[in-house]
Length: 103
Image (tube, rainbow, N blue to C red; front, side):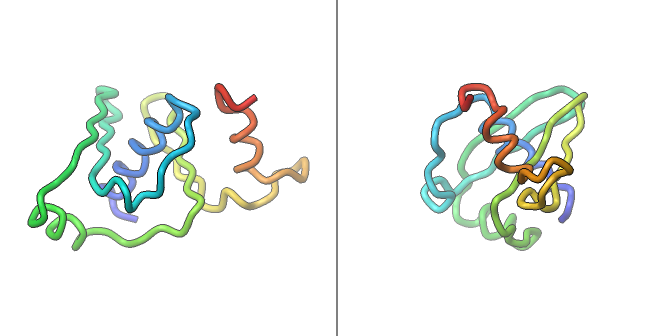
């Protein structure tokens, strides 16, 4: 995944971590999420058709679920959130239970 893709993914996760509401499918919110780890700045918005077409040339689709952990000003992509951890539970299930508002 390229840097832009990781940045967009990190921002999407950061925004989802700030609220425990159920997200609508991605297709209903075409746009971009930006996260700048050096400043913590986050930007969310929509692009016009030409900007979206240009941006999509630098992307590749992700197969869900997608997990990004933000810690210490860095973004970490969990490559296989369905993989079981040492205690036998899937990471995605653990994080879902431990995320604020989901307990």
